[in-house]
Image 1 (cartoon, rainbow, N blue to C red):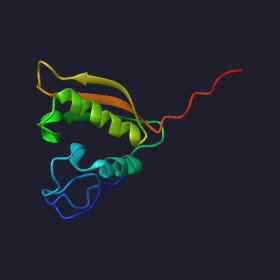
Image 2 (image 1 turned 180 degrees about the vertical axis):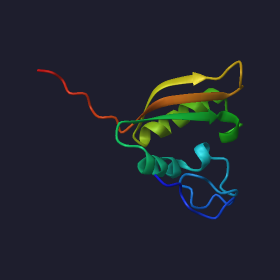
Image 3 (image 1 turned 90 degrees about the horizontal axis):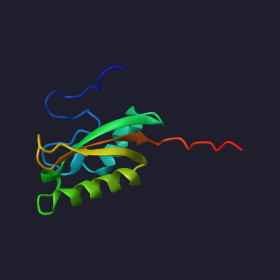
Image 4 (image 1 turned 120 degrees about the horizontal axis):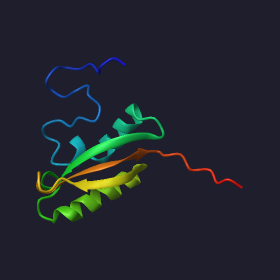
Length: 110
């Protein structure tokens, strides 16, 4: 796969990359950027690893509340989180979420 093309240094041409004025939303932009990026690069059943830095998303609420909110947003966008690990004591208020995207339903044997 060829790398995306665009003007160098501006962030344009890269899917899922937020510009400088887009605010402090998670994962490099808003919720739509994350889903758009996954639809381009992940197959159904593909896996992801996402790092969440709670203070960059919302510093006015506890980190655990931010983690819960972001995991719920992932679920709404057809991501299925398998595991969430906080990075304490190495990094404060950060977590890593591992999971799958559009995971196929398991067939029940009759």
